[in-house]
Length: 111
Image (tube, rainbow, N blue to C red):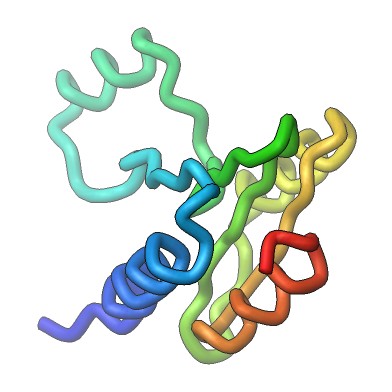
């Protein structure tokens, strides 16, 4: 089964680790298939639908990168998270390639 968004995220994560070692970067594993019981447990533990694919922290700055392959669109939960994140002062970018991420990190002053 092909998973182009997963491959994109792996490439982006590897790039960030290499190009911006000062950045704390991680993925919150919200997605995927889960049993109803496991989903309920995760929800009770604070899982938040729509959290961006990668969260980044550096120099008292917080940012989120949502990755989409091709013409993929954000879900309603992702749009809501995006708005809340920015309202709280976070940086946010929707990226479709490693080049997009590189441009974003330059714009944010990380590179």
